[in-house]
Image: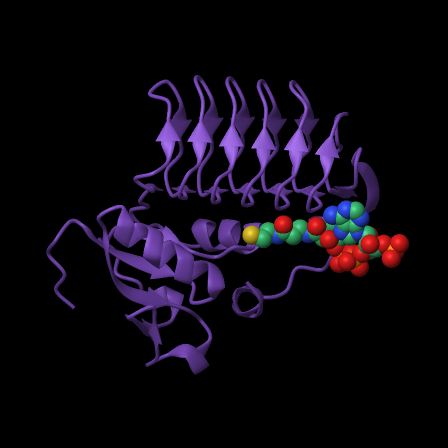
Length: 223
Ligand SMILES: CC(C)(COP(=O)(O)OP(=O)(O)OC[C@H]1O[C@@H](n2cnc3c(N)ncnc32)[C@H](O)[C@@H]1OP(=O)(O)O)[C@@H](O)C(=O)NCCC(=O)NCCS
């Protein structure tokens, strides 16, 4: 397809999350030029003005790429099945302390604040208006939903979903692949592979990995 501009990027996934990634990437100065998705029904259509051109396996090997799939498990599987030049995108209104570390493939949305010495892993989503305070560590494939408040010295394990508007008390630990419900307040450590919710947050249900994992194409259609 002959894209020469280094600012050009390709997008993996054609769901709702891809729409917001396309728009925030534009705001950050990138030019999304192609979308790839395994749902053939999307092929030939446009997503926010970007053509959906083919399957994930047809993504261009040398073009900067972002996985715009909201489901953390699917995003991880997609990443592990491909070797592409992942791009990290930070919205111009986000405030990221110079001492913070942001992993490759991570997207940081509008009005996010990430404070000193925080570490964000690879292919994470730090969604609109979330705040991550000092010395917190968020592992790979986490999704911090809009409006979350992660205070200081918090540790969040791989693949965790922090639901919209939740808050975490300082120095708490959340185990890998757990889900914290919308609006919850975490005041004690949360184990791995569970769903916790409420104020204060209590473990209620089996978590993400307690459910059967569908095939990659099926999961992308759900995302
Ligand atoms: C916690 C969550 C995963 C539970 O989802 P679910 O398994 O489908 O659960 P249900 O909606 O069937 O609700 C089950 C029970 O939990 C309660 N519940 C659900 N979410 C809750 C929450 N955030 N806080 C308190 N209670 C909650 C429901 O009221 C219901 O109670 P009941 O059995 O007494 O009627 C989901 O509600 C949630 O918060 N997801 C996060 C979504 C999000 O932020 N996504 C990011 C978008 S960018």
